[in-house]
Length: 127
Image (cartoon, rainbow, N blue to C red; front, side, top):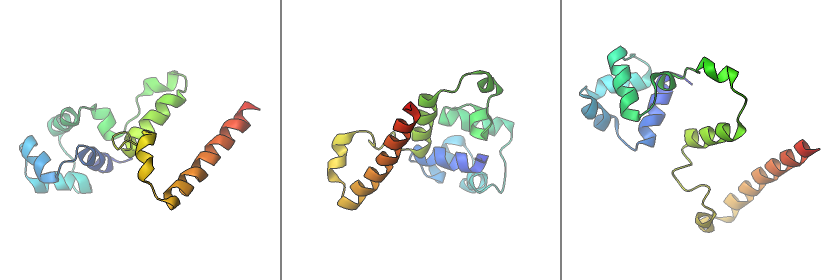
């Protein structure tokens, strides 16, 4: 995933507008907007400011994999947790089953299809 896409996702997760972030960083909204469109790239100092603001590393902001991970064993739980965070569903109560009571029938059917696939994969892996 490219820098500008990651930057936009971090902003949306923070539930802030481009104007709000630009103001906090001390830059023009148009400058920040160009980072999100990929028209401009921040300099090193601004990259550090952005990483600090979103509380991530510059490597994470740039979408760079840390080569150290290649030596670590695969961790499926970490992968799933990262994916859930990336989708932004960790903050909307996706895994809080009590919140599902307000779903309509079509949504429930769609969820059932996905769970059936997950269950099938789990069963075939045990064999």
